[in-house]
Length: 77
Image (cartoon, rainbow, N blue to C red; front, side):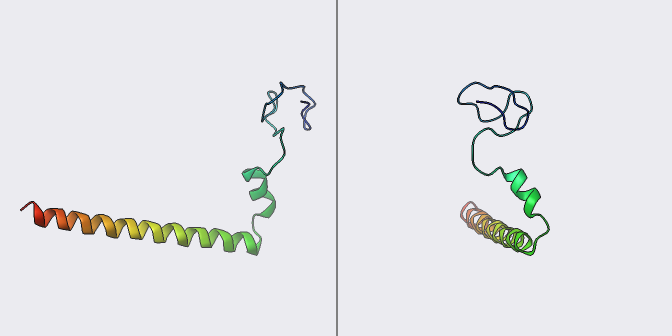
């Protein structure tokens, strides 16, 4: 498969170019998608929603660990 970026001929089945590292197969690449949409209100909103979701999960896990530790502390006295 020929690289669309540098023209190097690559072995069949490769995902990235052996010479320049460009993506050979179709589909979005996270870095290029982030570069083209960075700074837009939609990207900022999606980033904040993901951050809130991750912080909520972290809080939930922290509360669960504290509860389990408390119960084990009481049981092992």
